[in-house]
Length: 425
Image (cartoon, rainbow, N blue to C red; front, side, top):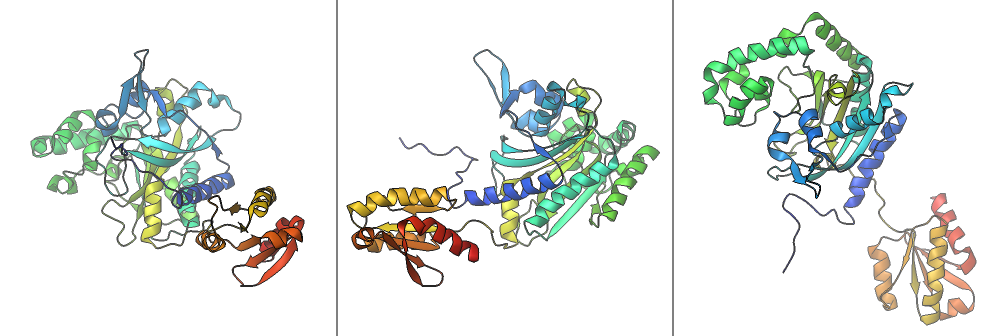
């Protein structure tokens, strides 16, 4: 019986995994500069966390979660997103008591959602996210947005569109909610069954429906911006003012809503405008969630964050044809001829690696020509050839594959020679 990979998942093979590592390294370096530190949470959590944190009315909870019972008959769920778990940890570990607030964190790892697989969207995907919990200063909203834009720009992406909106505070959202119900209710039967359910539970999410997005009532739906109270207007004005001060361009879209129930005030998405990227252009989504910490048993600590899929990040890089700045080859490949030379090459390879160089050798007892081809395939910067004559004279022939030159050095000098030549270039 042939066992194949589950639908909606992927193997990230050597030669491809370097792209994930490259993006993760850029994101982590930007987080370091912004003073955000890594948090790691379990891949599975109690199901109740996501029901309370993400929201019972969301598609994630209702349709997409991988939920199971363990042997103790406890309901557990593979994490579908990262924010709820980070907030749970914030509460459980009493990080709200830290003297320095907000607590700034980032995370990366696999997430799981049972949805129809399509280009750039998988049932297991890798997500990178940031959370800043403990401040209601609109400046932290601008900082979080600046952080994600810095990550994308550091990778070379240029064709980006930052879209922002305000969802307002509880008072503003309640007023908008009543207006949405009045707008959609007379003709709600023309909408899909999901939207019919959302009308009573969370009418804001009707605006996010993919099936009915072209319905005429969508274009005339009440705008949240018309229902913001003075406090919410002032908050949003502060956020946009800070973005202006940071020279970060943006588009205000009153119909932008987030798919999770815990958002309020600032909501934002980053879109790719690269030609050929695909119908789904969203790269990143985020926003403010001032009530989530309290909902999960903690004090009333406001928070803001974002998350992006690394798979979609890679797709955007490839759509813009950006060259990957990844390690493309070995520093040195040792070609050994004869049993004694092969035995000695084991220690030589280790010597190179101990010196901080990448090195390899043949493990298939191949002839010289085949070993040289292997060195070429692995794009070795230097090829070191050790035969019986060289071994007898305690030397090795080192070929500079870029320049085409070669030189004899002692076996003891090999690592230092290669390292010095690389540093000179």
